[in-house]
Image (cartoon, rainbow, N blue to C red; front, side, top):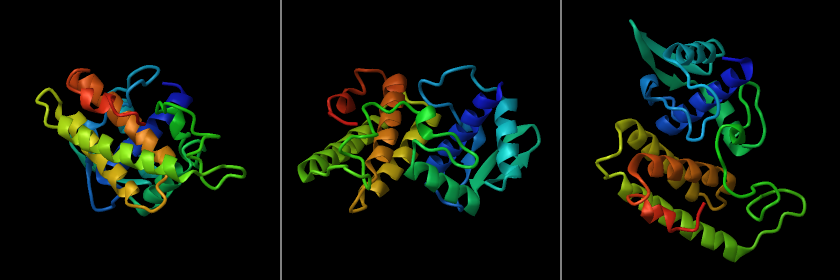
Length: 212
């Protein structure tokens, strides 16, 4: 595995861990449940690749791992890990000290840069009705996605990841000024994962919503 793929894998793992634990130091993620994002380009990581990722992150004091003989560990975020992930999620098109831009590992449909959802940029325009529509659509998307979680065809890993992603999205929507690029990114990941795991027919409820 080349260095660029290793960096992408570290980023994907931390993004998964942050979503799984809700960004809390008190929660554990089971590394054996990690899956690369939908649309991952390149070779699939082996168990030893995942172990290397965890040991690197542990060495950089971004995670704390609880190792068991012959198994991938349970992992929890450290304060430093949370801080860097919040930085990465706030600016998904920028790299951080340890991670590549999130847009490099996650497919975001539609333009984020230069769009009306961009906030705090010179010349960026904000129209109230667009944000209201986005909020309504995002809330409808979350409701529809949660209904799909009851599908028996979903594997436990997909269900756990989706529940964690939806929890992050719900918390973000509670803000008076949601970070729409982040919501779009999580929404796209949820949609693609559910369609792949449950099938197009079962996931029709989210496919009819014009979001993300």
